[in-house]
Image 1 (cartoon, rainbow, N blue to C red):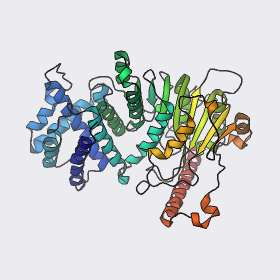
Image 2 (image 1 turned 90 degrees about the vertical axis):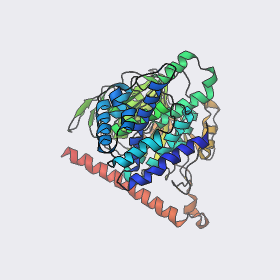
Image 3 (image 1 turned 135 degrees about the horizontal axis):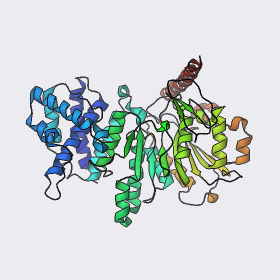
Length: 493
């Protein structure tokens, strides 16, 4: 991989974003337009290559038609292409579904096509270079608070650390039921390439590129970014079946089980639909979904994702999932789900995350690591190991962002690939037995034991700007909880 080439590409494409922003084109809208145009350019390169040329889009919807058009005719042709390809199936349909032109100035659109994209050979550029460039563009888009794109973004350091704990293999089937722009899926793929690349068989390579790694995303715009992200990293085929399903993952029972789930379901507690669980209880809302595989009925979106992911796993399948604090302590359905998870699955590890690492403010979250097991009478969870990475840890998105090395101690204590019986307790890492957990009120897993140094020692007080930000985060978290409660009460009236 050439970091210099990647940064050159990013800088070249990003410089033009400032020009378009004056016309009201948001950062994430710009990345979306790049997605359409990059796909068309890559399809053109495939059609023109000397060895095994491949026609992906019809001639009348091709990249060349954009190069040949000017002025209003260019804008008309671009809209025609977006509409035409949006009716296709597979990867084409996922990328162009409901696509719209957000660049209203034909002259600026022409410059983007001719000067910025056409002059690069995207098929000739190494997979890592163009993939990394696109990832950087997505990360920049997530920083744009006005676009709201940050809600789909998990900090790269956390994503990689979770993958390093799970050790994905070439024989895994991997999915993310709320994949956003595909960060977890790509991190898993890159881990496999890095650790098994030279030993991969042709069958394993084909499998990894064409169906072993899949995602689900509810939002069309985000799904298209994920599909393009995967294509640029060598996963999937432009004219093949889409590896990103555009649908509500909670809407139906899984069609297939997988061996590994990596996920950070969307924040915000209340589902837009009401789920009917195996207990038969239901509440009134616009649309009901019957999920006989669920343990309890709830409108809490994260609790429903816990149940969905538990159902997604095949026997001995494993999951690492980012979830907010309310999943740990909410009563009613929350208690039912925690009891089932502890008994029927091996909930072996929890990483308590610090504040200030997510683009969405006011988030207090954890990573739950669990495995599905065969049915038996005795509980599968023997010990839950909790790593407190929250107390006395303070991060911000700009001045002190979370980095991969900050999580190294947790990974070392996790012992990836080794027997968990070898784990040892430390100041931040403690084990709690099944009996201890079940004895807690409502099986509350919101467990802390470390003292906050700033409460005991005046010299340990944080800078005023950090304290102010933590107050803001706490208030935002409280407002989110109150809003969810109000919405739930309103749905019952």
